[in-house]
Length: 415
Ligand SMILES: Cc1cc2nc3c(=O)[nH]c(=O)nc-3n(C[C@H](O)[C@H](O)[C@H](O)COP(=O)(O)OP(=O)(O)OC[C@H]3O[C@@H](n4cnc5c(N)ncnc54)[C@H](O)[C@@H]3O)c2cc1C
Image (tube, rainbow, N blue to C red; front, side, top):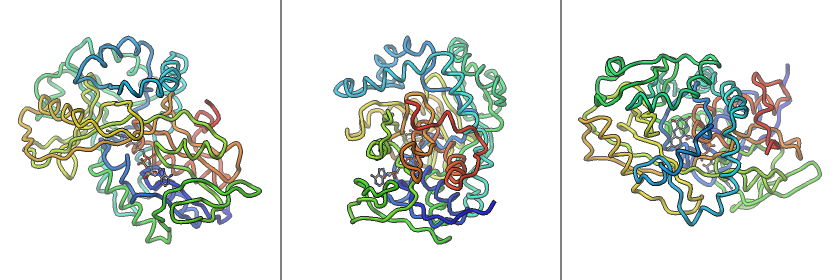
C-alpha cells in the first residue's frame, strides 16, 4: 500500500514520543518532535529498564483494597499518598479501585498482552538502525518472594499470564540462587520469565533513537506547548513558549502531562501521576545478571551500564510537589537486603512521573473530534515495554492501515 506523505508533529520526546516519531518517519512522513526538555529527560530517563512482554497484570486487582491500609502504614511500604493530595486524587482513585473487578481485569490483561507481547520485535528495527541494539538484553527476568504466602497472594496474576501464553516457570529457593547467585538467601519462591529482558540504559536508548531520527531528517524543537490554534479541520498550529508552530497531523505523547493537552482538544482523560523513584549504585561490587522484581516489596533491581539500579514505589502527590527523597533511601536499604555484598558509597537518586490511567491501559487512539489528531500516552508502569509497539500502531493509524493489534481497548473515549 502506498502511503500519502504527511507532515506529523509529535508532542513529547520521551520513549513513547520518540518511538512514534521513529515509526512515522520510516513510513516516509515529514516528522517534527516538540518538547520542552531534551529527549528522554523526563519519566523515560530513570525507569527500571524492565522489558516485559508478560507485565500484563493491571495495577488494580481484586482484593487490593484490603492491602492498602497496611502499605500506607508501613514507612518502607510500596505506596504513599501525600495527605494534602488525597482530595484531588480521590475521583481517580475511585475509578482505579473500580477497574479492579475480575471481569475488567481479564479484559485489561488481554489488551496489555497484545501491546507488550511484541516488545522485542517492535524495538528491533528502530534500535538496530540507531546502533542501540546492544542496550537491549533478552536475558530473562525473575520475580522473587520471601514467603510461600506472598507468592500465593499473586496467584491470580500468574493465572492471567499463563492463560494468555506468557512463558513462566515456577522456581524454588535453590533455583533462584542458581539463576542469580549474588542474591541474599532470603527468597523462598519465584517465577522465571525466560522471554523477558531489560534495557541497560533507558535514557541512552531514547537519546540514540532521537539522534537517528534527526540523522534521518527529523526535526526536534525545544518548546513548551501551551495550547492550540484551531482551524476548520482541527488544530492548525501549536501555541508554544517560542511562538506558534504550524501543524498538520498531531500525535500527543506528552506522558503524565498529556491530559492537559487532550482536554483542550475535547478529550478528558483521567490521567494521574504515580511518582516513582530510583537509586543507581555505581561501583557496587556486585554484578547481577538479570532484572529482578522483589515482588512482595514491589521494586526492581536491574544491572545497568551505570551500576545497579533499584527502582519502584508509588507516590500519589501530583505533578508539582517536591520529591520525598526518603522514598529513594528506602529503595537503597531494600537493595542492601537483597544483595548483602552491595557497596553503596556512590549512588544517584531520581524521581519520575509515571503517566497512569485508572485501568492500566494506555490511550493509543485517534481523536473522536479531530481526524488529524492521535493520542499515545498513559503507559504507566510499563511504558518502556509498551512504547515500541505503540510507535508501530500510531504509524498504522496515521497511514490509515489496520494495526496488527485490536486497538479498541485503547480508545481515548472509553472513560
Ligand atoms: C521508578 C519507575 C520505574 C519504571 N520501570 C519501568 C520498567 O521497568 N519497565 C517499563 O516498561 N516501564 C517502566 N516505567 C514506566 C516508564 O518509565 C514510563 O511509562 C515511560 O517512561 C513513559 O514514557 P512517556 O514517553 O509517555 O513519558 P515521558 O518520558 O515523561 O515523556 C513525556 C515528554 O512530554 C513532554 N511534555 C509534556 N508536556 C509538554 C508540553 N506541554 N510541551 C512540550 N513537551 C511536553 C515532557 O517534557 C516529556 O519529555 C517505570 C517508571 C518509573 C517512574
